[in-house]
Length: 450
Image (cartoon, rainbow, N blue to C red; front, side, top):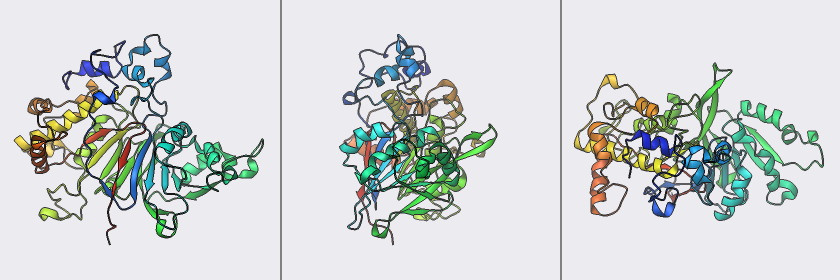
């Protein structure tokens, strides 16, 4: 195994200079030979499972300039992505949230987030596998092509009411203006041409700063918008987009900056899905270092008072911190399994370092992406990792990151002891998983809080 802090090897794995899959004796891209992170037990009052329909950028993976090059452009990710079932094959970011049925739920139990360029082809594969047919609603994060260009394909659900008579679409006024210009016939059927066979869509304008409800009766589901920044308009004005929170599940697929007010809404989530485009920084997306900084610096909800905490002084208890972080929206520069190993080592090193040496508070360290302290200052330099295109620790934490014996990701007494020690550490980092197209996260049912 290559050292997790070796930037040259990671650059090769991520498509900078190698003309074949590195380390031919190691089966990169084969999920049978690579252990997935052990996921924690997750609970939700409404969510039953989350199906990842797409986990790539608007350009998707593999990239055309790689697959048309005689040597795949030196890109290990694209070389693997052309294989059937490859976890490096990625459509545009989208998830299907599958809820629990109620007796009066005749409008389906699946909420789709984003309906982009690859939605229909992804649905053909992943809907039958997961028993999905009807759509309760479609939530749109923003009006870019990777989020809305599949809206026309919803005709396959509504023409002749073959699956359902209509599909409800929830979007902001800003997003609606773009949709109306791009698909006038979907908004006003009198503007259709040809045979006039278009989808029947019901449009619902939402306030990005207020929660809203989807469905009726006992099947109603509360949705909390998560306003975030995603690049700029005319290179100067901020471009706002949305994530969404349902129960303890928060989803942010496109952002370069998350306001404090949105972070406060996300606090207390069990699962956070976060944009992580690539290793180096981008003007409209989180880098891997930014996404990890967010997960490592997210404070618990201010109202949490376990272990003597107060609203102004959060408790040490990690009971209300995320149980799982999931990264999404990757470019072809990110190889799934190599990057997952880096994520595992990063978490292992920081958690073990805390157990052996509690971080010393430092006002000079600044704040992480979620507003909490950069308690890792001195052993993890996010900017340096962005420059070197890697995820790596320094000093003692780097040595600990290489120690896989008794890893908290495994089984047995050693793993249990290590996990218990991590739980007592001053700062909690949840397991962090790479998403892939077709990934399913399941939830056990829990009662709603009164």
